[in-house]
Every structure is written in C-alpha cells, then in structure tokens.
Image 1 (cartoon, helix red, strand yellow):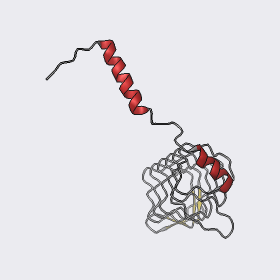
Image 2 (tube, rainbow, N blue to C red; image 1 turned 180 degrees about the vertical axis):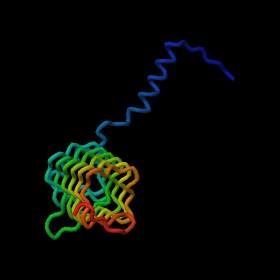
Image 3 (cartoon, rainbow, N blue to C red; image 1 turned 90 degrees about the vertical axis):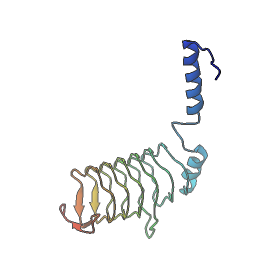
Image 4 (tube, rainbow, N blue to C red; image 1 turned 120 degrees about the vertical axis):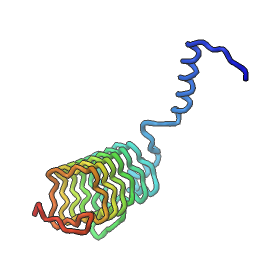
Length: 179
C-alpha cells in the first residue's frame, strides 16, 4: 500500500472540491424554465418538473398536472379547480408544496402526494382524495365538505378546525362534525 502525504490545508481543499463536485448538479429551483413557460401558455404540464416553482395566485382552472412533480412549489391562493364539466385526475406530487388558500374544489386527486404540504385554509370541497398521501400535511381550517378521503393516509396530518361535512373518511365512515 502506498502512502500519500498530505497537509491539513490540502485536505480541506480536497474535501471542498469533492463536495462541490458532488453538489453542483443540485439546484434550488430544479424545474425546467421552458416547461414553466410552456405551462403558462398551454395549461398542460404532464410528467413535467415544476419543483419549487412560484405559481402563487395563478388561475390554473383545468390545468393538467398528470404525474407532474410540484414538490416545494408555491401554489398559495391558486385556483386549481376543474373547469365546468371537467373531471381530470391529478395524480401528482405536491409534497411540501404551499397550497394555502388554494381552490381545489371538485378536483380528482386520486393517489396524489401531499406529504408535508401546507394546505391551510384550502378549499377541498367535493374533491376526491382517494388513496392520497396527506402524511404530515397541514390542513388547519381547510374546507373538506363532501370530500372523499377513502384510503387516504392522514398520519400526523394537522386537522385543527378543518370543516368536515358529508366527508368520507379514510375508513369509509362519514364525518359530519362541521355541518
């Protein structure tokens, strides 16, 4: 075995070089800016990556986010409700996204991932969240009137002051505590 002499300063420089080489592909805003521009004009973002995108207060009624990654995106006060007579399924990743005061009423969100998402004061009336992952999500003051949560994971979710009325719970029971 061959020993290679090194100095303390050289070791620090080597570690910094190694760390910057490993971390350089990582981006704070991982989304594709061209996909974001395309989405703004077409309202379609199938299989696209909008990680950490700023989409606050945007009118996105009828947007197609089929299998899109919106983790960490700021969608606060955005309108994501379907257009009249439109019933799209959004099986998308909203992990750690900010959806405060967003309008998701009547949306089909089967199997969507809302783990650690901020859904405070969000309107989810008559939305279908069957099999959705809401682990650790903040749903404080959210409106869940007529919402279907069958099979959804609500582990560690914050449901303080959430409004339940004709809400189908994960076990299939109906919650009318807020009617």
